[in-house]
Image (cartoon, rainbow over all chains, first blue to last red; front, top):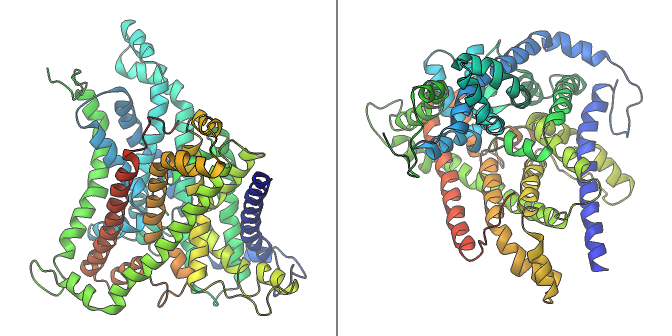
Length: 273
Length: 294
């Protein structure tokens, strides 16, 4: 009997949490399509005008361009830098490996605000603050280790015998990589790529600290508009939020085809907001 | 030939070096170097020549600045306690798997993936004076006046909970479902009540994982920044230490003082981590039976 009640309480809590979450997301969604909405369960009339308004007034074309550029640059660079490191860390045993893994784990563990300020200071000193390059370099700091840690198990799954066989048959190192490892690694690269994409698009702290006039990503622009408050109609800000949400949700749906939810947490958060 | 730690031949050769170098260079140049540079900078104040602790002295003399440490602890500790307690309760209850588990865990990763800004904007609307929650509470007559849940301490706590609860829960669920179920079965067979099983058998096994989850939630909450700005009172009750550091860096343009505040923030997080790891060591000593995460 008490066990039943206990189970019931669990379900009630989960339902309550999900209802609150739906309320939070639904509020943004309804508000973005509302003509005017005040103190009623639903707005009296709906419109899509706020999307047009947001697109024009918040320069969304440019902001989306920056966001996509930063995200794609982060994916390509993190994979390029992270893949060889993941290969060595998965295949070789050497002195200091545990220390190296710890070093790579720290940017995922330490909150971005803690190292963001010294990082921004450093990049500003080299004249990269406020530039697109600066934003890409900053968001890459946690993404390179993420690429390494996501790819390591994928390399471990590929039997080393395949490499040996190819080498015996006279394949060069490059041929082994191109013809054996790379095709087997494609699922890993996809998984890592999508996780990096979702993470970069929703990364606020580092992008915020480094962004300037022309280098704001979508989340950063969203933050400035919410924080400016009052000046802009809340519906237009919510329209912008819906565009952002649509982007993240689409990527998330793709991501979930490749990874289990619990993996997302270990890999996404590590530290981070 | 060099010998590795385990007595095996070290497999570190030219290829390994070439493969590791780009990422190692990246982490050293953009993570380790900035940290060291930040510490160096914090010890060389803007207005003084040479080495000085003036920035730290200024921070701890000014109540408006050192008060942020207290404010941040006041946000981070209650949040970490509530998040890990609720997550433990839920994860323990779900350790045998429940109906719709996959759907529930999928829904739970939404707030993590959507990010803090979108969540905060939604919280502003949903929990606001004219939001759905207050409408429902007023309509059912539970309250006479709308509850003030945003632009104060509660707003920031709500946002922190929404972001970190799913993270902590999924972590603990993974940890608890990795514990051998036969231990619990044995205890039950020997006549232990469910509470005794939890208190004497399961909790000691969960404690090391719980300590790590608590530490991570605490460290993340201690760096609270955007939600403290958007949902709190950024010049008053929720002026967290990250806000103080940001203001020095980007409003006063005093990078040296900002670095000092960032160092103090990092030290507070480190101190809490060390404390928790020490407690964890004590907890784990009697309880490790060699069963942990899957």
